[in-house]
Amino acid sequence: MALINDISHLWGNDIGVSAVGDLGLASDTLRGQQRVLRRLLTNPGDNIFHPTYGAGLARFVGSTATAEEIKALIRGQMLLEEAVAKSPAPVIEVHRITNGIAVQVNYNDAPTGQPVVLSFNVSQ
Image 1 (cartoon, rainbow, N blue to C red):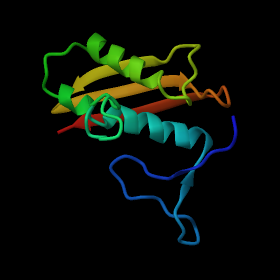
Image 2: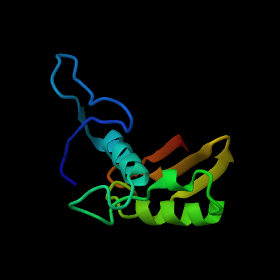
Image 3: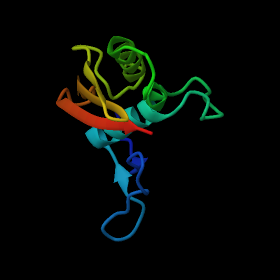
Image 4: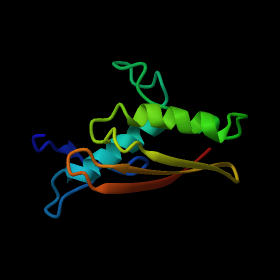
């Protein structure tokens, strides 16, 4: 895979800047992590150019959806990202927390084959 950069933007934060004040760039594993988070946290329909993009995990806060249902959605969405290796399949943990859900995904970065651990909470 050719080296591709995205503007560095971690969900919920400002756009990253470089050491000299330019736009920060994300590449390699960091780029993949940012793309996975963006996909999982974007609500379907929020991207007008790609209305089916996103898992919309926030909608499960306080819902009756089971952890298995949420895991299945996460797995399906993650496998749409080119940075996520298909084999071995991602290992996903979902737990209810006060006013939210805690998610941890372990997957292999497709370009490098290196393991990646991504943990985050979703709350309202």
